[in-house]
Amino acid sequence: MFSKYADNLRLSELLRYFKIISKKPNIINFVNGLPDPRTVPVNEIEEILNQVIKEYSVTAFQYSITCGIKELKDQIIELVKNRGIYGVNENNICITVGSQEALYMLFSIFINPGDSVAVENPTYISALETLRTLNPNFKGINITNNGYEMDSLRESNAKLLYTVPSAQNPSGYTLSLKERKKIIELAHENNTTIIEDDTYGFLLFDNYVPSMKSLDDEDRVIYVGSMSKIFSSGLRIGWIIANEKVIEKIEALKQNINAHSPTINQLLTAEAIRSGVIDRNIINARNIYRLKSEIMKNEIMKNLGDKIEFISPTGGMFFFLWLKDIDTEKLLEKAINNNVAYLPGKYFYHDMSGYNTIRLSYSYPNEKEIVEGIKRLSEIIY
Ligand SMILES: Cc1ncc(COP(=O)(O)O)c(C=O)c1O
Image (cartoon, rainbow, N blue to C red; front, top):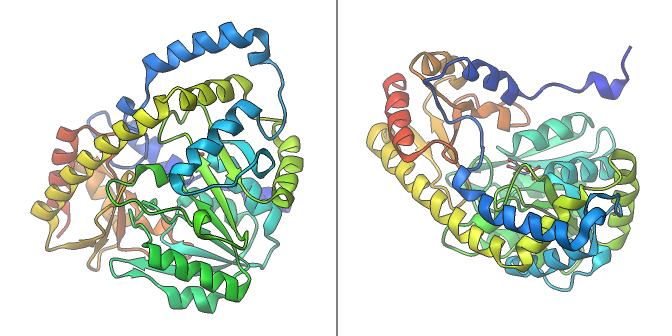
């Protein structure tokens, strides 16, 4: 009945776990990466909304152009200077419905079935799910606590590399400047297009590392950004920065998908950047997540130190654990019975190979819950 494309569509594993967990009111939920409520500046949003409606009236609720309104593009051009990106003009940007739409569209315009696509092992689960619908030939690049496996990237000879180089979801790993330069060099050798997902780039805790895009003088890096972790995830504002040829294709595809991202959300976001609300909020979010990650790290070291390996998060919202020889999907039932839940890490591997790994999200639970949740986890990990 359905198309071949539809046959490849699957509901996210995340959804399955949400359903199980939502039935247990006392569970400590380390599963989803819901932003901390304190990182959404509701009062400022209310003020800006009123101001935008007064100023733009009905225009704020009308159709607008496909790749985004000038007001927001101009502000994004300013914002990404903080990630080292200069020389962007309006024709290099497309505003999307979250970075998820950006990834969906970019993968769609580049990948034919069988094309070799390099992804980090582990990498962002929804990018993998989107990629799977296109039947690529995956090439995995291991990230471990020893770093990034450059040789695999060299050997992959990939057409496309999807990378989350800053405060990666799920591993918390940030590629050093040297590693970034090496990747760009390898991409040059193999003529690989790089999609840089910088969703957490503004949430690096301490050590600033410029984006891959800022190091690229061959126009081979396509940059994807998002407002979801630094302003509001529900507004669904993301963006792509790329050369005009790429943006033209994206524009044609976006016309078919949703015509444009909501006008009012774009106006609101533009004003939030212009007025400094986002800059202040980035500092606030960074501080909140730094503190939570430190609390989680202390508890992990205290309770689980000799049983696991992990990467200390450099930003973002997640811890990734490597257990000894334990199947973490099987272990999850025990965890849920002990009122704590995590996401088995294998879902972040294109080949499901990380059977002994766990992703813990510290973004939503409060500090007390983080402490108690790690204690509960330690009771079931031997
Ligand atoms: C690495 C990464 N990329 C993209 C996204 C999608 O974010 P959004 O569509 O809300 O911008 C997420 C969300 O968690 C993410 O972790």
